[in-house]
Image (cartoon, rainbow over all chains, first blue to last red; front, side):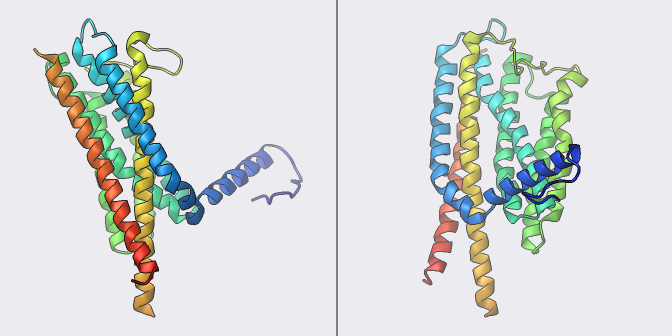
Length: 265
Length: 43
């Protein structure tokens, strides 16, 4: 690996790659310092959480009272304003678990392992909310609570993967493991993400295709705007909850380490 | 079919799920940080 300030003998792709690696490594290590993290996390936790609650409530109010009903789905279209953020966070949560697990496997920093373990329960709750709100929406719209459709089945699998990760991480922690097995599982589980994402393209079954892209949407703007507030709000709330879990896990680790020291000394 | 019953049920489930998650996360954080603080002060 290149050292900062050392001139690379053959500047090119390798030096740029190594420089990028060094920069990413430095930034991650700086942010991964537990003391620095806690100094940042303590004031950020209530700010993220309450800003998220406010935005989500405003979006829900807009979706329930300020938008027109859909000509086909009628009033049940309003479930979209909570179902889409839940689906997004169910998938984004696992991306977070996978990135944190990869960070732990590469840099062996314990804070990365704690981040993965903190994200998992929140991601599991939002994956479950996605499945539940989808089933409630499906009954009046499709005439059924559940169908073994590509999107629904892959999302259910993602929920089970979350549960398996939580059980594995707890078992590893209880038997004093080094966290490598849950981290490997966290990375391996990310294979489900493209399956969930492209299930509506690969299998043309009951769930409709993508309605919102990065640059365009098939939903009229008069019905779309509250969705941005609920997506933003639930994302901030999710981040606040993850910080709470990280702080709890760090404090628990601190207590356990001190108890071990007291028992040994 | 009354669509509002389904809308209400979906919003109630979401409120319960996110509220329960936030309450559990906050309580476990408070409890763990209080235990760490009391141990640090040597109580």
